[in-house]
Length: 165
Image (cartoon, rainbow, N blue to C red):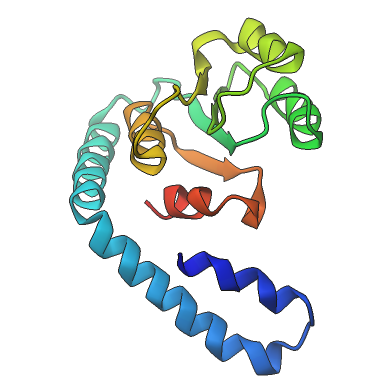
């Protein structure tokens, strides 16, 4: 898809030469995502408006716990999985609800430990999902996540699309 050529710019660091084409590719990607996911984007925007309206009318003394989520394909015995377990562990759980979304079905001792610690706040993509992007974006939307952090950077093209929705 569109994201295949983006990493090629990192073979040589010449922003004066590559910045213009990167901006054009970014705009093309944004237009493609807006076209492909137009209905989903509108649904998410409408629900965000409702959420904001409800939040502004609530009692100011009510303590709100910010919902922080992490997105990764590697929540198992992998360098990202090992590093993320410490990130997840050291949140202030009185102030934050922490979630993680795995776009992989792979499970092992590390992923089982995360599931034991965080229960239903760790979500794995079921097998045979026809549209990983829509499924993951819907899960994030249903959980009303406030902050979403991609742990895999540019290594997972699907995550770029999920993050843009």
